[in-house]
Image (cartoon, rainbow, N blue to C red):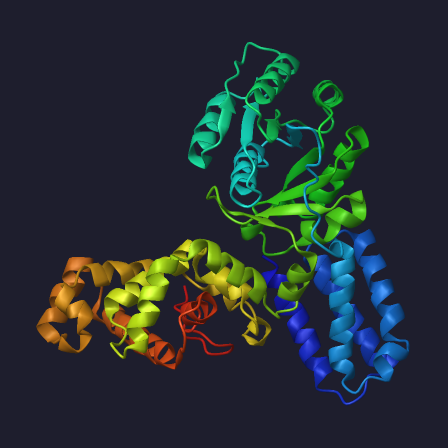
Length: 456
């Protein structure tokens, strides 16, 4: 996410940080570049205009001219204004209500609302330690109810069975009664996808809202629609008292226009972003962390939090103990690290959060190809355990057998062995066995500007 914007802004800031002083002229040049970058990122024009005015007001004043490092001061202003644009802090769900607290999901057709309802149920169960029930009031889309039932089972939460022959208001009333009977903490009501211009459907969801009186009414919108996402959210907000927005498919959005436009246009905070198809790929939206990521400064806090959740602690600690004892880092260990990286969303996801990504060549992060890491796993699986533990024993005939067995070429195997050697060096430098150190090991095959990751 934000790859294009990060590339453009990083180039602009590199020009500024090399200057001893900043004049009104070169600040205006930089602001023109920032404006162009935001417009190319599909940020709404009204948002761009207001943002540039605010940055200009601060940058041309005393704040930058009296700074010892004016270029860095300018970047700091842009970062602060980006945070203000998206909301100064994470807007948490407000579930203070007599149980069950009701969350109503609204959105357009195809925005990923049903999947997001299930993702949110899992997040509430795991992170907020709440008991959750899901119910579908979508009686129009074929298999919508069955889809939510399947996802509820995957998330391990309660599901209230409904029928497409029922009226949405009757489904909602029955689900609420059942949730009360079972002492459920949160009831999530998935509604039918609709077009904002479809007055009949908008009336239906307005009636559901009046009936249920939800504590949260969340608008689910596809991040890849850019500034249109913000305009659609505003249309819904005019008809329905929204409390927040969830951006879906943010991992496929290289521009970021939706994230930067939604709050300014609707006045409603982005509460979560969907960063993948898996049911656990939902993250709270932290404006400060996102601003840092946009400016190529990384987001180590989110990265470490993700590692704490998704990296197998027992295996990580076992590897750390092994390295501390001087037993080395073999190809079986390397394969395990590759799996852990996949669990964390792949190399591109990790790189997106690593500090210093702004120093990489433009577009470098987007060219990372996870398929080559999966290929490495296949190659290692074609080896005997003895070869994995002692890769130095790989002679010509063994290499030929391994490449034939894995359907790869000798150069693929040699690249794997080179990557393994680099990872070995990183692991030797690691001290202690905590998760933060294990994380540095995971990202250790690439430093800013190093270019060691496989590229597509």
